[in-house]
Structures are given as structure tokens and as C-alpha cells.
Length: 255
Ligand code: 13P
Image (cartoon, rainbow, N blue to C red; front, top):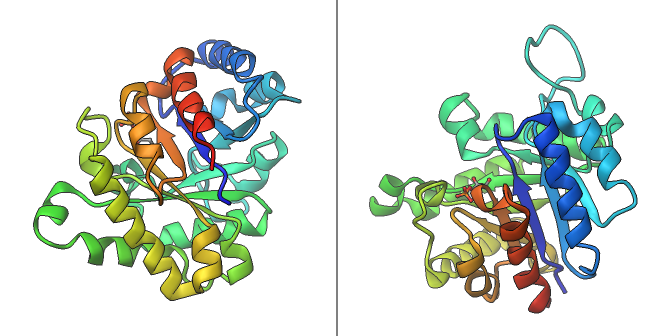
């Protein structure tokens, strides 16, 4: 049975003080959540302080990217050991904003996934198509290439320690959410690609989140779909009450 995973991607929002305050609120209101995995991904600058806040709670820490090298002359980058030391357990990799603005490719996603797994952390691998790709009939080829690229030379055992976030680019930050049916159909396809690579056992165990304008009012419908195992939330994760409403929607229909 796949456990829901609800993750808040705070992106380049919130100061360190604001991040600490939000983390405190989330810890407080999530105390009774027993079945749903809760993850928050603040700015790197707040990781250390937020780690202190969530210690001993059921809220886990993620960062929003890493570099695949261990160390060296990579100005502006952060290594896996640096974030692991701070208590980070999940790493968001290949977000569409990284792909769109910072040159992320399926190859660099793969390098980052390998580095994250080798450190014993869990990658949250983001995939998703643009509206042009969807309308042009390329949805399946784009997603398939993203998945095969991300999982290149990743063993079955390693694959089991990954999470996928399907985030249609046209739904991110736009308020235009995929319909329950669109999201379900696409995520079933994602699972079928995983099945082609790893077989039924791995494909049915892997958690696939939906991301892109998930909000309290549409979360229950999306999370009720067979192949949707959680959410990667942007805007609605920046306020404790809306993030908690989505967590509650997951908890209420925990599989
Ligand atoms: P929104 O929830 O703001 O659409 O962002 C989704 C996202 O990109 C999460 O990674």
C-alpha cells in the first residue's frame, strides 16, 4: 500500500524567520497526522534552523536542488553532504523551473538522482510537459524520455527509494489545475513506463505525486485517483492552513 506524501516546495519564497515560523505552525497542526508523509522544502538558508524546529516531529526536511559533484569550484552550488549534515532527507530534482531557467537536462537529473541515492537520501524527481508538448501530441514521448533519462543505470533496489512528482508545466503557479481525469490518465502512463523499466512490483510500490495548482478545494479529488499518491505543492504550501488542508485531505483518504 502506498502511503501519501505531501511536500511543500517553498521555492524562493519566505525569509529565514518566516520559514522558521511556518515550520513551527506546520509541526503544531500536523501532530495528529499519522499516515501521511509530510515534507517541507525551504530555501537552503533556512534548512539549519528549520531542521531544529522539526526535530522529533513527523515533518521531514527537503532541499530544492543539489549539485552532483562532491565539492570543488562550483560557485553558488551545494553538495549532497552539506545538506545531509543538516538533516535533509529528500531532494527535489529536475523541477521544471530548473529545466526552464537553469539548463537542467535529463542527463543532469540522472547525475543528481544517483548522487542523492548514493548518500541514502530520497530524490523527488520532477517530470512534466509544457502545454505545447501536450497539445502537439508529445505528452507520452516527453514524459517517457524524462523518466528513462532520470532512471538511467538506477537499479531496482535504488528505484524503490525514489518519489516521482508529475507536474504539468502549464499547471504550475497558474491556477489552472489538471482535471482529476487528466492527472490520473497521465500518472497511470508514468507508472506504465516505470513498469516497462522495472516490472510490476517496483512500479506499483513507487509513489507518484501530482503538482501544479493543487489547492485545498481540488486536493481531495486529485488524491482520490488511483495513481496519485500525494502532492508537490507550491503556492498553497506557503500558508499553514492551506497546506494543512491538503495534508488532511490525504490523511482522510489514506490508502
Ligand atoms: P503551485 O502549487 O504554486 O502551482 O506550484 C507547484 C510546484 O511547482 C511545486 O513544485
